[in-house]
Image (tube, helix red, strand yellow):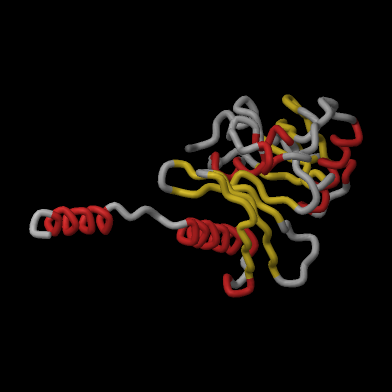
Length: 210
């Protein structure tokens, strides 16, 4: 016993010093990250946000969200770990576009069923972006001129100019849940992190600040 005891003490010491984060602790990190992210995006009291991690594999996770009674808010999410921090890949309600998570190496089980986009950008898409600007600035749609320089079926980058004004501004727009939304508007600096949830290509994101 005298020979065995020192070994047992060392083994217990090593076991205590090499403990790894448990699954519950990892899930708590994800829940905390999502609550903070959703609070910053939508202004909900964190105590009113319910987050359920339904699937996790290594540095990737998928889950469900409940925020009050607003059915139009996203109720699903995908996150991935970058170094020591969790980051949001996408939040959505009904479906999401496959390219948004391409390059992230998510397990196929988490992204099965994502929608394959068409490559076509139509006149109707441009008209809808004009309509978004009209609502934003309370102007007639006929007084808004947009020029789209880069696009795919779900993203657009171009310039917008209002009637009677000498200069226009740059915009980035994305289609989410079937409707176009202006994500960036104007000629000032903008952060790359604002674009990450929408899956803009590197070319369309050019000029954003890291």
